Length: 335
Image (cartoon, rainbow, N blue to C red; front, top):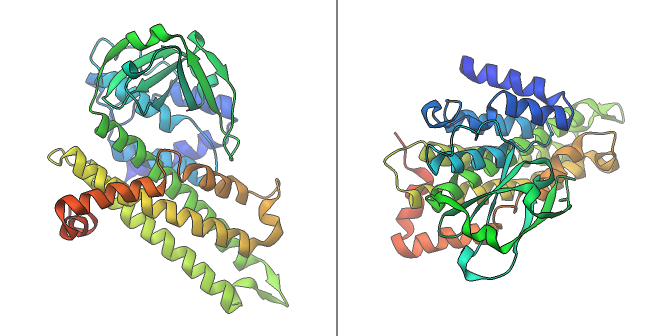
């Protein structure tokens, strides 16, 4: 652990004590949404690894924050050119990836499940060809919605003329890779949080005069949880290492991210299930914090793409490059 990592963890711990609105304000004021983007390009400096750590730490505290979506929106806007960079860091933005081309349909542009739209000033929209819109949230009609964790997932409907206001184009594969890798970090953080809370519970809770962890079935289930944490961590570390390589193709980076998303989603399913099993009924009460992790795991595991979609990515890579290409994506060193 390095000193900068310690500082980031301490900062996240402090911000996690604030309420949602104060936390969001401070995240923007401190420039955290610009972490991982060079200062010359309108960012706050640091690396993608720093941003991944921040996202993981927030999730590990069991708190919700728009930093994931806002940081990707910031990266996309600054990537569109220097004219967009000066105001990017000071503006509350979110992002949504539109599955079609903007030109493929007429009429109003309907954006569904937009994270935190009602709390943001602008919404960045990226279509499948990488064309970027930077829309004022107030320019459309927002229909509030929520996911299972109670986080904002709104529907935004904007006039048809918005389709003609592109600010530029980006590498859509690189943007999706960054977005999904950050989701892997968030899920990993929540997975660790659920595991840590469960471990403390079974060590401290007694039955018949002995801690629950003394029961073989409980100890075995806790070991299964730990195994899933390690598997998810290994896949995530590999993908994060690939993302940091400048000479690796975007498609190859996406392959490693696909494997990370498959493993983190699988760990989310199993850890949430076992955590509630070992906690019993108290795991679902408002007063006890387990639901802050497990509800987010259920809400986040498929938000960017489903595990089936990520498996399709891996399958196509296997058909294209053979079995060895998949083993290379999982196991070859990145240095």
